[in-house]
Image 1: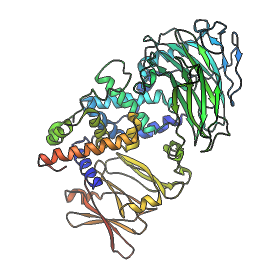
Image 2: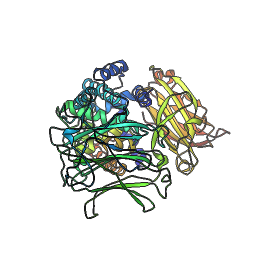
Image 3: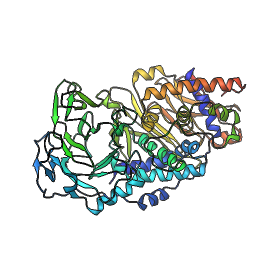
Image 4: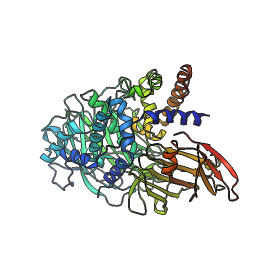
Amino acid sequence: VDETALAIERLYRDRYVRFRNGVAPISGSYEAARDAVQEGFARALRSSHQYAGRGSLEGWVWRIVLRTALEQRRPGKLEELPLDEVDLVLVEPERDFALTVAVRALPPRRRLIVFLRYFADLPYQTIADALEVDVGTVAATLARARQELTVILDNEGVRP
Amino acid sequence: MTETIDQLIEARFDRVASQVDDSEWSDVLARARSIEPTRRRARARRSVLPIRFALAGAVAAVALATTAVAFGWPGAVVDFFKAQPAPESVKQFFAAHNTALPHGLNPNTTLGQPREVMTATFDAYNSPPTNPTLHTLYVAPTETGGFCYLWTDYGGGCADAENASAGTTNPPARPLGVEWLAGDYATFTDGYVRSDVQTVQTRYADGTSVTLPVTWVSAPINAGFFAYVVPPAHQTTSNALSSVVGLDANGNVIGQDNIGVTQPLDQSVLQTLPDGTKYSLPRRADAAKATEPFKFDTATGGHAYLWVMPRTGGGSCYLYSSGSGGGQGCISLQELQQLPPVNGGLDANSNVFFAQVKSGVATVELRYADGTSQRITPVDGFVLAAITAGQANAAGAPPVAAVGLDQDGKVVGTQQLQR
């Protein structure tokens, strides 16, 4: 029995909606995000034996799903996650224009961390595992993003 | 204050997020099976001209198809083109991973070129090791000047064409690539070296070091490979493996990977809950002693549950699902004292409330804007409850506050809720 595969299935059943919503800003639509999540989990299953307990399993799967979504959006070989190049946006901006504008004002990498924190509801450590950055970097980035979001939304007369 | 802003922003995002659950696990399985990687048990084989390295720990590493030609590296070198070609199944594995594998493992390896370069005995699944088995290392060049490697029944990685100035921005291009397995401490390490690296050493927290045997592989690979089982004696904080370094001919460190030895209990490992399900949980969480005080189906068709288990060092750990989301964590007794009496929130997707409460809270009362309320009795310091459908829907709003009451019904804490 591949225990990691079982855990991946459990993760999928428990967190699917979070995964899809988390990658939707990368994929550009919920439909494309669903495809990225399905394919990403399939890749994770295929390479489950490569997960050796370094970092959280969820962070490892997130890394695969994010890479899948980025590859689908920008086909070709990816040596690293091009986090600074991808323009992430809310997929249905009409739902909250003020939030859309506020998010777009953030730098790309900060924007992705914001989406993973607030859209996908990920804890700091999982974000760090997913993006292969230090957890302190995540905390510092979110602290700055939080300040910027608050200021921008305040300026528009719209409290978060 | 930060937490309040955090919750407000999160609620703002929650309002614009899609709540439709269009998951389909069978589709994931079908996709996974469309390119099934080959995993095979390593087999014992006769080497063409074996050179047995000094036993290092419990590892017996054997270089295959070696040559006496000097390539500038110390010791024997495997002539890549004289090495045993990989079997078809391994070639297929590399081919599949050209397109399928993430994290740098989709590198356009040169198909038809994978070669067998060494074997080693180690336990790829248990740390500390309990069942060491023989593994074979296959290496294949890539079209871009790098290489990929695969340990049977373990895994592998890829290295870009070397770039000495890559620094930390592009780890696969560095002169030293290190992987390791760890329980509380590292028990096994493997990797590759190249550039001017002449010697590989494991270094320990007590200041000692061990020089590892390296299997060098000629062009087009131009790299050395190592696999090393850390001796059982090096399994304490004071003498655990702390780094792997690559040294040049003058003994200068030109590549180094540090292996954290602090707080190993916070490292996540796959654990088994009492009902047999597997989860990646911090080692600090005692999953074998977990209880499941809450378990129910949500109104939206999801499965909600909460597992609570002791935390090594005091406090508790938890794992919960609200049916559409969830979380896990460990909280020490000291951290618990710093939390408000009721510390939780609503899952807007499934109408489920989750909270951790202090010991003085005997009842959690969810209060609605229309004046109605719902009472929940904490178990083991937690509550997980479905929001009563009539209140959530008939009143047109979810609860606005979670109030902690003591045994006498006195309010000991109130948490305002954001949907």
